[in-house]
Image (tube, rainbow, N blue to C red):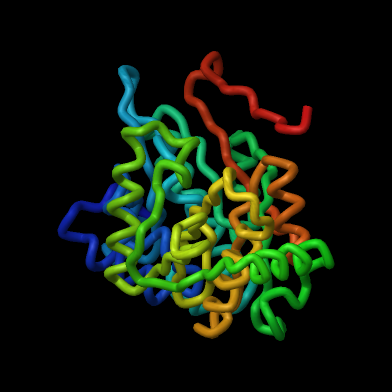
Length: 316
C-alpha cells in the first residue's frame, strides 16, 4: 500500500466525501454531509497519491487549550471510519483498513487534545487504538435482523404483546407521517435547551430528504407519544422517542416501536437499531422486543494524562 496522508477536508471537497460515503459498503447516514451539517464537525480525509480513499467525520469542541474531538450533544449516536470500496483479497483488505485506521489515529494524536467518541458496532478491529494507548469502553445497543422477521413482534416476549393489545384496545392509533407534531422538549429532556434547536433542524431536514419518518401516537385525536426514525440504505435507527407519562394507557412505547419496525421492514432494510440505553428498564424493554445485544466501543484518548476522565461504569 502506498504512503497515506491525512488532513482535514475543506468545504469544496465535501462532494468528494459524499461520493465516497455513498460508494462505501460501510457508509452510514451519520457520515453523510446532509447529517453532518447539523453539528460542528471536521472530516479527516485519508489520501493516497492525492486521491481521497478513506476518512472519518468527527465532532469537535474548541477549548482554551485547543481542539477536542468530543460530542457537544447526542445528535449522532455513532462515528465510523469510511474505507471506500474493498478491492483486494480479505487479508490484504484487513491490512489496508488497519493502515488507514493507524494513519487517522496518528493524525488525531498529533493534531488534537483529546478524543472521546462512540464507534459504530461494525468497527471491530481495535488493535490500532490499543497500540496508540487509547482506552476502550465497551458499550452495546440492541438490534433486530429484519430479514427473517415475519411480523414486528415475532421475536417479542408475551409482556410486549400484552402491552400492544392493551394500547390497541384503548384506542391508541399510531400514524406514520413525513411531517407531524413532535414534542422535542419531551424527547430531548436530557439535552440542554441550546442543543435542541439543531435536533429540530436535523429532523426537518431528514424528513425533507426522505431519510426519516415521524410516528405519532394519538388517543382520541390528541398526541400522547412520538418516535423519530432515521434510516439509510441498510438500517433504521430509533433516534428519539417519548410518551405522555400522565396518560394511563399502557403500551404506547411498544405500539410506536411496532409501527416503526413494520415501516423499516416494508422498506426492505436489513436491520433495526433500537439505540441502546444505559438505563436498565429501557435496556430490558428493547431486549423484550427481541433485540439482540450488539457491542460497540467508545474510545478515550487525552494528550494531558492529568485530564483523563475516568470511564463511568453505570451499574456500579
